[in-house]
Length: 188
Picture (tube, rainbow, N blue to C red):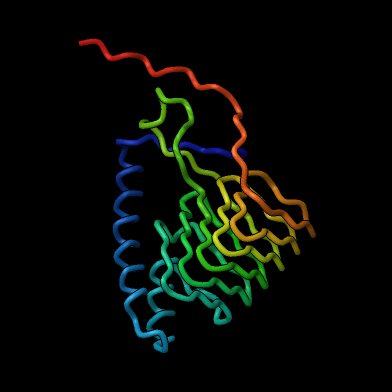
């Protein structure tokens, strides 16, 4: 993934991350139980989740799920439909006038691909969604991706590389990129 960084597990930094995730999980749970028409309470909880005030023009329909909160930022007139997941430890930047359909996942974190490293690190890289982008229902955007200004991501698409400005991308596919080394065998 482009711009990948690593957080070693079992460190004070990874424990602080895990504590923040627990806090935000509680906050999103509270957000998703508020009456739909209680906009002031929803805005207050969103401010806690994201660690700063959100734009007045931001609209997030519940249920909404976020794991870290402090890595997300939003432009003006952003609409996020129901059932979205923002895994934002690596950073999510959402530009102005962005439309995000129901069930979209923006995931900035993962684990190393190599089996002998997989449990020792959390990998992360930012997602940037430029102005005037529309992301269709149930699309998934992976770490390190930039979606260019004015583009459309079709429903159900898995976006694993940058999308040029003013483009339409669709579809999912499985493409074998490489073969992994087997894990070392534990000796008794």
